[in-house]
Amino acid sequence: MTESIRGFRDIFPPESSHFARLEAIARGVFACHAFGELRIPTVERHELFVKSTGETTDVVEKEMYAFEDAGGRRLALRPEGTPGVARACIQHNLFAVNPRQKLFYIGSMYRAERPQKGRYREFEQIGAEYIGNASPSADAETIIMLEQILRKAGLDKFSVELNSLGCAQCRPAYRAALLAYLHAHETDLCDNCRARIDKNPLRALDCKLDGPKLSETAPKQELCAACSEHFDGVLAYLRDAGIECAVNRGMVRGLDYYTRTVFEFKTAALGSQDAIAGGGRYDNLLQSMGGPDVPAVGWAMGVDRAVSIISELVRLEPGLAVYVISMGGPADRPAFKLLTGLRAAGLSADGGDFSRSFKSQLRAAGKSGAKFAAIIGENEVARGVCTLKNLETGEQRQVRQDEIAGILQTA
Image (tube, rainbow, N blue to C red; front, side):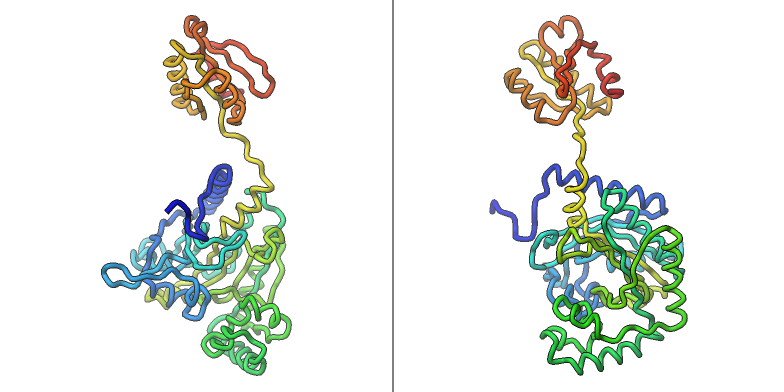
């Protein structure tokens, strides 16, 4: 009862502050690109993920938290955000209001994976979905947003890899070639890949065991003229934006709904779990779910993974401006009034445990990260002042209590 479930964790300060900071940076970038926030439910119908994410994906086959509720409905905790966003757009007919939807989400996802560094069973994602724009500029815009978020957050050592998976016109020939290749090498494949060769041969390329072996020798996608033009357009827009990227013809991503562009942001700081974010275009997903035939592109970032790197690169300055100390007796109420007034003025202030000794409060002030301590004793009460002590230099001076907020705001 007093221990968390394996793979689910408590996030304390200062790590939680890094989460909040990354979320704030993402919201700022999204606002600059006219993306609005959509808050999707944590629980959806199980079949939503089976039909959208794919029956033969690891997410659906092995990792979903699925259960039956009291009403006999088969439900699941969301393992990713895109199906829920697509479902919401269809259900609420958002395209009748605006044929182009630019949406983002921030929230926890759930997968029953083996916990390891940077990977948890409950994990946070920040994601963006641009629905209704078929232009390669939409692919580039979403990638540029992701690049800006990571750089603003302090992560600058990462690589961007892209590929194109083709479309309904050029993929069948590739699928047939890949299927023949996998059957010819079937004895070299893991049990999972052998079991789903005919259902979804692309999954073998994304397999953690077989993917690296097949990346060099497996046939590569030959794009039709339209897909080739689209992919060249994405690369051109990214070059114009100053984003360096590499074409990885072996990349397929782990979900069934991707078409054309797929991409990943990778970093060596995570070891073997090198993908920090990824996404791609999914032009057929909404129609396959019963919605309109509209194109879409999006991505998701693993916030836990990003924070594990950023927290080592970025030192957050203490947010506390002042620590209020009372020397006891008649000073307690004026000290508490000062503490309350400073907070009302928008300053981050701590203190209030006036039952402790002066020395104990002063030690607490030193550990709090505050730059100043505001000290009130009986003499200060009589004169309407407080002693403002710089905790970094030890310098102190007396100031009027009604002036301290202004002094601290400009310090």
